[in-house]
Length: 165
Image (cartoon, rainbow, N blue to C red; front, side, top):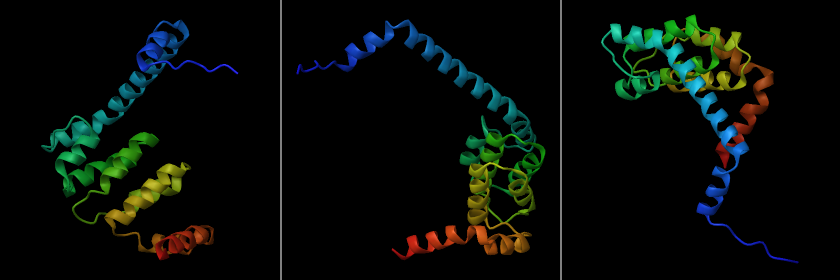
C-alpha cells in the first residue's frame, strides 16, 4: 500500500488555478453571485429611496438597521409598507428581520398576512422570530390561534423540554 504525498495549500491552489474546468466553474459562481447582488440591490432601491426621503441614508437595508437601531416608527412604517408591496422572499426576510430592532411595538398585521400567504418555511420562521422579538400589537387573536394549533404542539413540547435541560 503506497502512501499519498501531501500537497501544500500553495501547490493545491496552483493546480486548481491551472485547471480550466475549475476556473470556468469559479467564474460561473462569481457571475451568479454578482447577479444575485445586483437583483437584491435593485429590489432594495425603492425601500432605501423611501428611507432617504425621510432623512435616513444607508447603503442597504441591513446597514440601515445597524445604523439606526433601535428603529424609529418612521423606519418601521417604511419597512411594513415595503413588506406589503413585495413578494420576493429574500427582500421580505431582510425587511422582517430588520423589524426585530423596532424601538416600539408596531401593528403586526402585515407580518401575519405575510406569514399566511407565504409557503416558505424559513420566511415563516423569520416572521415568528420577529414577532417574538418585537411583540407587535393588533395580532392577539392570531397569536392565540397560532399557539393553540395542534400541528405546532410537538414543536412547543420540544422547546419546553429543551428549556428544562
